[in-house]
Image (cartoon, rainbow, N blue to C red; front, side, top):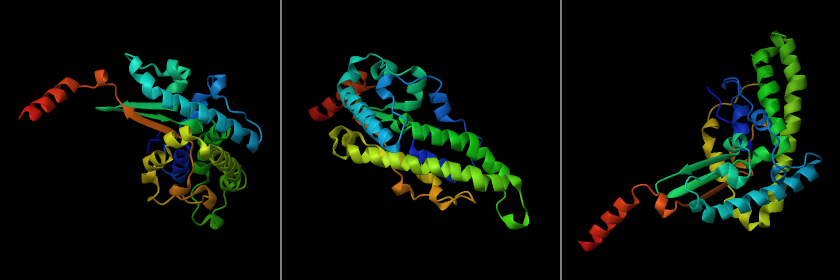
Length: 253
């Protein structure tokens, strides 16, 4: 199956579970890192504690921008997301998804992608772990069919991904803990929506040969993905005049 863009920890968890079924993935992190992110969104890459604190600070800034977007959106004839968020267009396409519906606007900001540990983990999965897994298969009756590729996967590739995977959970959980009292973050936290988007991957039996720590329950997977839904400005609503006319006619009757 074709790989959907992986821009969150729930998405990466789904990708890992389906390593045996995905087509060769293109690393979203590698695309994102083709340009240096502007300083306001740059998260320090150091110790876990440094990354956690920097992540919490940056995500609070993003949450505030989303809150202010509710009032600013209608000021644009055609909303210019790169200009509003001060992000390169190529990165905006990866970080943001904006959907205008009949009378509402739904915005998703994939803040996990701002985390250096997320990008490193996603790249290791897509560029190293994934091809190594394909070379190591099959895992059934492995003791009867020795394979240098399987040994390398078990001894090198899987432990490497697991180390970054466990650090990533520490960073995301730590940032969420700091932000647990931030009203802006709580109002825009999109974890439930993002987990639901990947739910279809969990009933399927996961790829064989994977460490159980790489296969968490979906409901336990944290994320700092942000979402915001607000009314589409009246002058932008398609068919608004027609709906108002019908409402007026019903009231007359």
